[in-house]
Length: 93
Image (cartoon, rainbow, N blue to C red; front, side, top):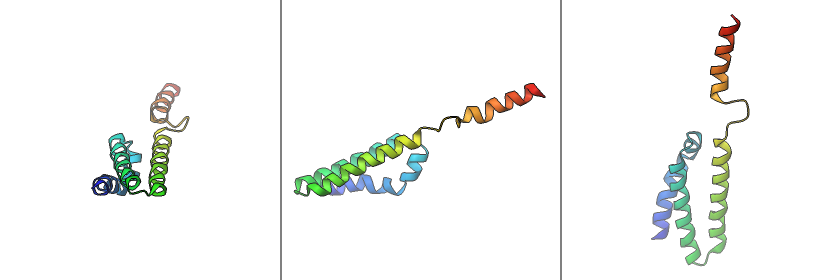
């Protein structure tokens, strides 16, 4: 039962994972991680601790991936790209 519920949550979200990261959809990430946790609990109850640990590692990797993709690089924010250059060029002209 835990496998059905956990993988039922995690797998559909996994197919759209890159979109979830690009759009910074934290609800989608939460749903995926909840599904992976539930499936991991199912593996732990069956005594398959290695498989459970792999699920935990994926949760950490996914969270790091989401966090790194959510932070814009320095000097590349959208306000600096469009707003500042447009205002400066109008003042100089």
